Length: 493
Image (cartoon, rainbow, N blue to C red; front, side, top):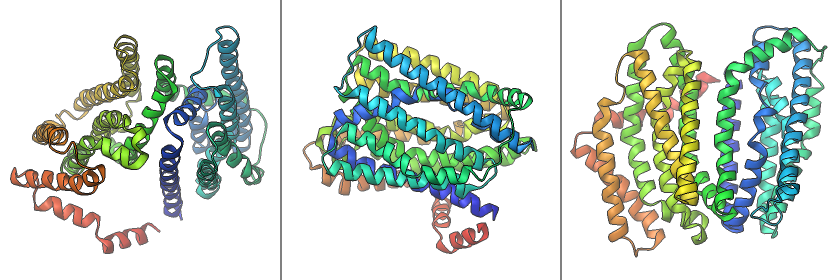
């Protein structure tokens, strides 16, 4: 039964991601970069300070796991959430009021104030879903936790596709999220009514704050970096530039599902190995991951980087061609992000959360300096934001590597330097061929013929250089072995 809970949780999150990605491509292709930029900007505006309303969820789960009185935990967490949400709304509305009345700030889109307000209402209702998700996650009741969000997301994506075909633009598309959120509120209230609520407990509140503080700094930095980049980009350029960047990020971000899945597995696994001081097995797992990454993932990323412009044109249309340059930079960033997943998990697995926080402080500082340099001084617009993202991930990778090496006393990447060098050479070679030889070739031919051919050539070169061997192909065979997968899923259920 416990494994079924995990299976439903994982499946629902994968389903949400895929549905959102598919509908996002359809909507982005039809409405154009300006509308996409307006929606992305409004979402970033509303969620850039969302940590005010959502800091205490992890602390609540911790209290429940400690066996604290559930009824009083429920009441205390509910009241803290309501107060936090009121403060959050006051702050956002105050910022908007000051911008419009005192500074007379002109947004780069005529209906932006309305879109921001609709997005804000949707976010507030979304916090009811978040409350439901947190309280039932704490009890491992995954159906009640995930079902409302899953239904809301499916409905939202269905509505926005319908709305875009009906000719609606930014306001109509922002309403899709609000309507979807309202539809399933009765289901949320039905679930919440099944909970018992006690009274406010000062002791539990102090414990909640104490548990939340170590995690809050990292949460705040993550939310700020993931949102204010679009707000700053609009300030230095235009809503259209935000649209180009958001389109490229949505495509490049699809690869991050691999790193997120890997991180979910590595964190508890590495925690166990480090607690038992089983560093030999830990190193073996990391080396296996890195070999898989360089042998099978790197060739794919290389071809995606080189043909990024054609990929954007095929998926989103010629009007997004500019996003191709951004996608190529973001894919390099994703490369370092995926490569660094097990390395970063060594630090968290060792319980060194203070070091993780310090690392992200350095990351935030690099973010600020990069923004100033690439946008303010060089005026690179969306390309500047993409380069900023790349700089952050490279710095994050290097810092993770330095701290992780100190924990296990071994250089984790030196063994794979040959793959990295060959990757740089292949990327340069393919890029030269793409610009000089294949420049005039149709995008469809590039994607459906030359793109897969380039991946095959990469594997062939790996084989000739003895960077790939029989064991690597056996690994892939085992991964896609239907009989073994069927047995695994049966054992999980």
